Length: 114
Image 1 (spheres, rainbow, N blue to C red):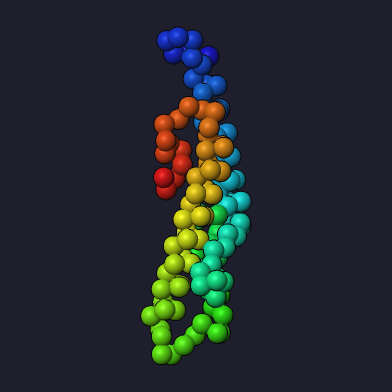
Image 2 (image 1 turned 90 degrees about the vertical axis):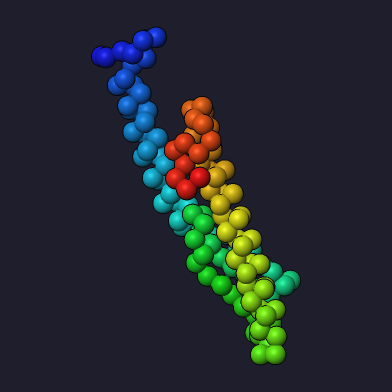
């Protein structure tokens, strides 16, 4: 077995890296199936994202649809979407840190998109 200075075993490191890569792919699949919701306007607009930060649904209560005040509806949609994307990204970041936390990787290493 090849060893680096200090007794590091390259084969063991490569196996750990491969396992981490497999675990990260599995986590990404799980995150894609999760659903996170955020709402605005007291629940009049609800945005739904998956755990990867992708917007997957918008629900708009008919009571908030006012042809005389389209700007308010637009603002509510933007607010709900921003909130759900923020929540989803934070959730994903936490899950990735749980997976890579014990490795002593610098922030962002092994976490696509961060």
